[in-house]
Amino acid sequence: MVPFTTDELEAADLVVVLVDHADFQPDLIARHAALVFDSKAILRGLDFEGELL
Image (spheres, rainbow, N blue to C red):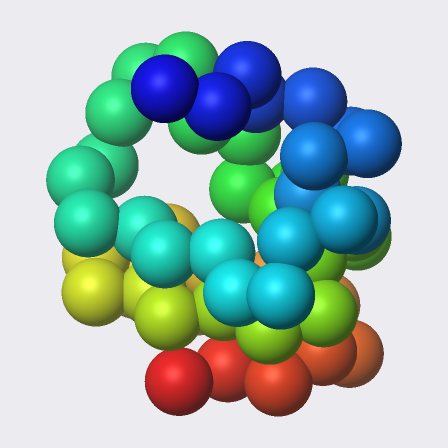
């Protein structure tokens, strides 16, 4: 398991969201991930400038 940190989000080629877990912070994902596969739509409504799959 990879720690949920801004460093890991920024280093990832792709962030995959498969569950809507209480520990996930969608705003951190939106600010720090460049490419996200968001199967649970947790980024809906957030200001996200990366690529969303």
